[in-house]
Length: 128
Image (cartoon, rainbow, N blue to C red):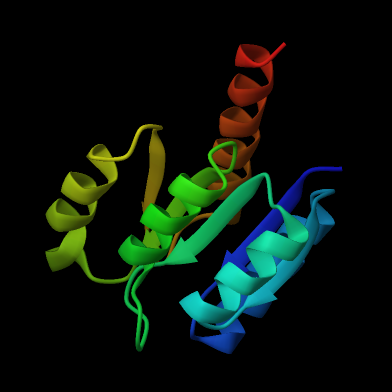
């Protein structure tokens, strides 16, 4: 079963995303901030990080960098509700050694699941 770590400081959003992924057959853990997420990531070793960008304290960009460095096999999808921030997010994601899925909130759950499955499938194929 594929493991997903959902990170969003908005508890309703995080818990809703967790439910969507659980119902789609994923094993899910939830963190409500970047520091909590890093602790959970080391324990849970997710296959996919689904994270918000704008969070109090450390933001999602910082979290993406740390996860990429410390858990290089983890795929990443980021969510942002700030369209004005989109170019900056794309620029930062482009600096990472692996592709990052970028979605704006709100997004269609089916599209998110499709992207997650696609990223995880292509990662599995490249490591077979």
